[in-house]
Image: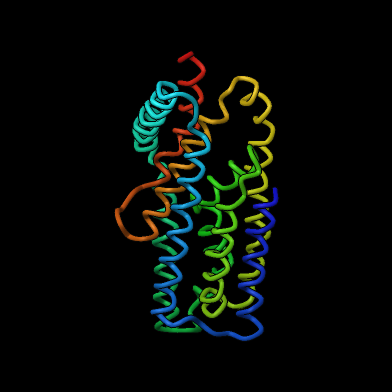
Length: 240
């Protein structure tokens, strides 16, 4: 749960700083920060993959094969279920609100700031992946990165939507906390059946992919791959 607390703290600090002394980073500073955060996300993702894949050459090859199969099947399932659709809709609504406020700062969209920011922060795939891994192995670094991202976003959101943005830390804490606690409840069973590493490898690859997305290297619907988190341990369980 430490990662969940740190993510929530990031939202609080970013919002409080914007409320006390409203200011925004220059575009060049935002670009550099985004690149730095993307690199950290890639590093923490690859680190998780590295520690999750181990053993002899053949064991490593087997684990990599499971990872690739799980990611392929997970993406297929995710596309069929259209998991990316809600996130796209929320993103479109957020852009619409920001465009309306840029034209008219007193637009009615300002009143929807809390709901828009809550949705954006809660559907962030880095938060899902980070919360699950934090609950399983207390690997909280991805949620620290998300806390920084959310905190920086709050600097701009408070300017647009006002002080209610700080309250988004409550639903973020509840959603990520629920995911972390659910994963923690699953940890003993996964550990007893030697399935933790398969989940960690997939989760690490998901986090790595999110970092690639941040750097605009390639457009990827990361959310579509989340079924892989259930498929990988299932394959590992039967492939003894």
